Image 1: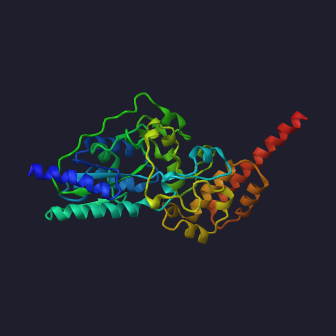
Image 2: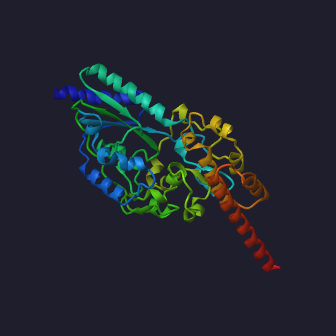
Amino acid sequence: MTDRLATLAAQIRDWGREFGFQQIGIAGVDAAADEAWLARWLALQRHGEMEYMARHGLRRARPQELVPGTIRVISARMDYLSPQTRDAEEVLADGSLAYISRYALGRDYHKLLRRRLADLAERIAAQCEDSAYRVFVDSAPVLEKAFARNAGLGWIGKHTNVINKAAGSWFFLGEILTTLPLPVDEPASAHCGTCSACIDVCPTQAIVAPYELDARRCISYLTIEMRESIPVEWRRAMGNRIYGCDDCQLVCPWNKFAKLSVERDFVVRHGLDAPSLIELFAWTEAEFLARTEGSAIRRIGHVAWLRNLAVALGNAPSSDEVMRALQARREHESALVREHVAWAISEQESRRSSRCTKNAGEL
């Protein structure tokens, strides 16, 4: 039986590659240390408005409670960085452009990974008809990073993303919970060493200590998860980041080993790797829905989209075009949009005034 399961585990890895995954690992369900970390994180309220994190609580570290009978977590990773994507640093350096996190430039990854994992699970089930399984891709309370680490896919870096020595961190994760007593892999060891690049570069200092993220300060949280007004104290630091933030990954030295994705679904759509802020801000709701169809971006909705863009325009280089774009949204039906537009106009006017004062002093 042991030899048969070992052979099956090897087959699962081979099948995973057939289905487009770069790596498959297998872990047990014990995550006691991570459960304690999660409890502390929640107690410190670092999840912010992500109420679902607290609602599911410690269940995230107990997959056997999510799917009774689970004794193994099959963890998979898939690279997503698409070729022919505009250089991220170039976009961030140009305040007239909008920066969108690289994972969201193509089609929504949830459906693709879920479909591939379901195909993998069905092939496993065909070999072991008495087994049970369930597939997850950000669709249930599972500590996916912890189980990915335990399955040998990589370690959790100081920025709290999973890093693989041979592939960096630009990849998605997904899981299959199963009742099969498969042999488990060795957990990945950590290799961040004394490096603090991710901590130092974070625009809002959301990485409050090595391996500790305060989501309430994170630009990904502010632009995607948060639905209310973005705290004024973080707006300037957001720069031109309108959907997510990749700064901590961009500076990670391990990402020199990152591999480009071959998945067509992850190819950039609608030029969103380097779009104009003014152009995106002019999208009507119908245009927003049409151009984000099948994209992870769509879930934030048009109002949050305009809110984020207003902040970026407030941070953009001053120009008549920027002011006209903001003025056009000044009376928007959403109070949330109006408030952020007013802030952006104030920022632009203040910058112009300062420049005029400086120029007058030089005469």
